[in-house]
Length: 367
Image 1 (tube, rainbow, N blue to C red):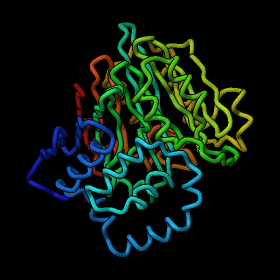
Image 2: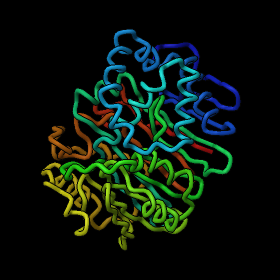
Image 3: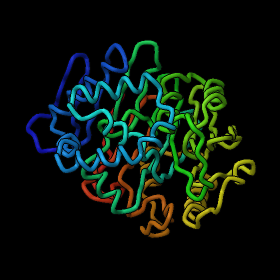
Image 4: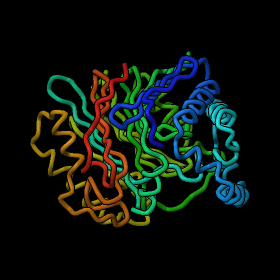
């Protein structure tokens, strides 16, 4: 974002506030289109760098050529009408071509991640998540698509909070008013398979946040809508006090309720059923999983400060080979902790990579 003396921006019933460098956007419109239009208008008012970048004449030519190249592929991905409407709202308010926004939303869906969920003895829940990429890509994302805490309210849908960037309609990590929490992870090393009209993976996760009030509904969504990309989802129900793993492949899925009170997720399928879809499991993914296990071994309670410390862990070094060897690595461009039942988000405002090791984690309360 460009430097500005203003820290608050509004449009209609929606509002963006900057808190120590972190954007907190509350969207409260009548439907998906109006939410997209309000968000796009606010991003334009706030002079987000990504808006100016996408209006650059040279980049517009490049994006048009990329759209033509990938047009047939994009048409094989199911992109629900309500999210199509929201993206149209972004396009109409920012004057960025719809096809360019669609390309950005679908060509690249999920990046590497580390997550954990932990229920304390008093019933409170902490979910930590780092999002990372290869350094060159992480640097680009960090420069132009800094994270925002979105709180989204649409009539007839669950109110939900998620971490995303401007102009993206998918929701990869977040929680809703019924206490369903989701954290997404790309599965490296899986066999490639394309099934036409499978669900956009980001839209799949958002569908869960918008519609699921319990794990039964999460299971029904998984059974009815296979995803376009292989992915791991850590899904937690705060009200039901259950942690689950949802492993999805373009033609299969596995939904497991974990008996332990804590869980860790890495970038490979862990169930015997889903491991058949792996070509290989990378050393970095195994090392990261072992790191989580060692941290939580014998632990019965976890404070917010301890959760933040977990996400800073880089005991295996900062190198990022394939999925990375440490929870924090050189490509970590998002780091945050969700705390329920209060609905607080603690998110890094770091000004350089890895963001988990720089700056501070800013508390954003959704209510």
